[in-house]
Image 1 (cartoon, rainbow, N blue to C red):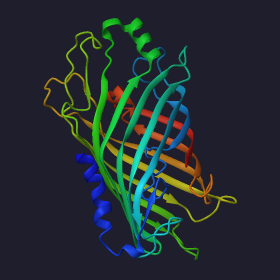
Image 2: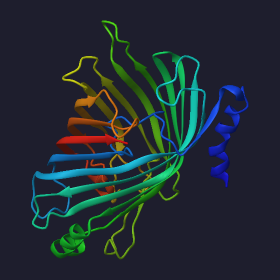
Image 3: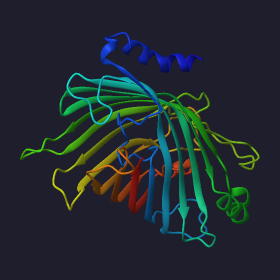
Image 4: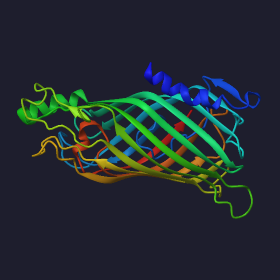
Length: 336
């Protein structure tokens, strides 16, 4: 009940204004604070095929062909707005609402003998988003996640293979936790005149931890009796940039640059001092490609083709103890 009240509060406050100029929407899509393409754990449909760095427990060492897949949706539940539902708000217009983000993320090894699923991550939660028009071509937006859950799992074939080859040297860590997030965005849409900067988004935020025990815990049976030290870190800051250049590459498509930078925690399961915070490393996810200037799937969808370059902490499950990981891949992102 506490979370329901917190989620409903912004809508009730906004409704205290001039009701004649406001309208409520229910189970519809709005583009308030849409994820940027490079956001590593966005609730969108994304497929990346290319070269993956070596990961722990692989049967064969070295780089490999693989896929990083995401399937998700930010489900618009209910909201209130003065802005037109078909586009960004004009000066002085606003909108706010509640979303239910749900997503699944999978890392797939196409080199090892059984072509195993390396890791699966599952996310769901509740999200508040709002937008306000500063001018007719610029706006500020807000995203608040008061509560969300992530559960991660190494693939069964990876676990079975590691247990067979490594015996008591294999440890299976349960990375599962509840988190919150707050982020701000400044966004703009260039006009058609010469010298237009195109469309852009500048964002900054922080993801924090609710769970009292940290980001992970360990069943003694899963780690063969080894001592696993808890996580002492409590959150990660991030910044994002996305820029759609004004020039069309060909009819209906424009160049796009998208960046996501996070000061990621490097999980350390065997710290000498349990109270010692884990080390961190700035991890960059970049997308360079083309995006449609027109929508797909009716009036809401969009598609982008891009080259993905990821460097930094492995973002998947218990593999976040790996400080140097890379993905170089061709990607397709679809927002519906």
